[in-house]
Each structure stands twice: as structure tokens, then as C-alpha cells.
Length: 257
Image (cartoon, rainbow, N blue to C red; front, side):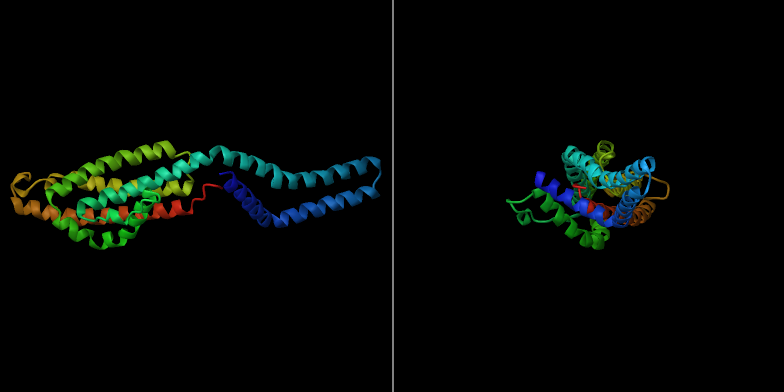
């Protein structure tokens, strides 16, 4: 961990040197000019000119040294917090894919998981590789899904609902704004799917003979169910796309900064 922090310290210092190169040069030049001018001035003005020269160098010192000391100290204090935050957010994103794909028959072989690596990370990679296939086939799989599949989805949706609310509540102050934005966007898409599924849940988790009775007969139930399948398909595809966007933002999050 110390080695990583030291590398981050040097990288951030170099980045800041490049970013503020112009300011650094201007401050140094002003400091030199003030110092040289002090030799041409009388005592009182000479002291002022020397102090001004020291002030310019002090600004450089503050930008490139003091600020880095405080940044490095904060980095040490929060490194474990950021690491755990990122890990749990990845687990939450992984949970979305796993819990929403399995009821519709999308599985990967656990033989593909190495016993020597990080199982959560490997499972996540396998899940992400399946997203394109899921998006292309989910509509057909939803049409052929049985009531027990929808019942399993109902249970999974409940667990996802609790997990994402807990995750945002716990980590909203320790994740970067870009990551927070992506997980809030994912939550919004999931809620749209959750609402649509919950409105006519009986038409999915029950056999046709147990569907709600209405004066228009079963044909009306079938028509409504088919219409909602289209809505549910679009909603769940959006959830998978937003999950991948969250993963990409997590990939870009350098917790050592």
C-alpha cells in the first residue's frame, strides 16, 4: 500500500508540475525580478522587495509541497475506505447482472472460474462478457419464461432493491460524483423496471387459470401481458446498459488519487 501511495504521490506531483508549468515559471521569474530589484532600492523598499520575492517562492512551495503533503495524508487515511467502497459498488453492479439474467436462463459455467484468483472479479468479468448476448436474446427468453422463473425474478428484484438503497446510503459520501451519477442513473432505470413488473405481477408469476378475472376474458389478459412484455424487455435492457456504464466508470476510478 505504501508503494502504491508513493507512486501516486510522484505521479500527482508530475501531473501538477505539467498543469501549472506556466504559473510556476511566472512565479519564479517574479521572485527573481523582485530579488534583483531589491539591490537597486533603499533599505525600506529593499526589505519589501525581498519579502515579495520570498512570497512568490512561498506560493510555489505551497502549491507543490504543502498541498501534496496534505493530499498524501488524506490519501493514506482514506485509502482503505475508497478501496472498500469501490469493491462493494462492483459487487452491487455484479448483483444486478446475475440476479436479472439467471431467471431467464442466462448462465455461465462455474468451471470457468479460477480457484487461484479473485472469484468476485472473475465472475464480474464473465457477467460483463454476457451483456451483449443477454440484450440480444432477453426478449425471446422472457416470452418463454415460466411462472417459476418470474417468481424467482420477483425474489431477486426484492433483494436488488434493498441492496442498491443500502449501497447508496452507505457510500454516497465516499464515491466520486461521476460514479454516484452512474449508480443513481442505474437505480432510476431499475425502478422503472420494478414498477412495470409490479403493476401486473399476477400475469407473470401465475398460470393462466389463476390470472385475475375480468369481463373481457382471458384474451384481454393475454393482450395486456404481451404489451407489458415489450415494456419489461425495454426496461431490463436499459438496466443492463446502465450497469455496464457503472462498471466502466468504476474501471476509470483511480482510488489512489
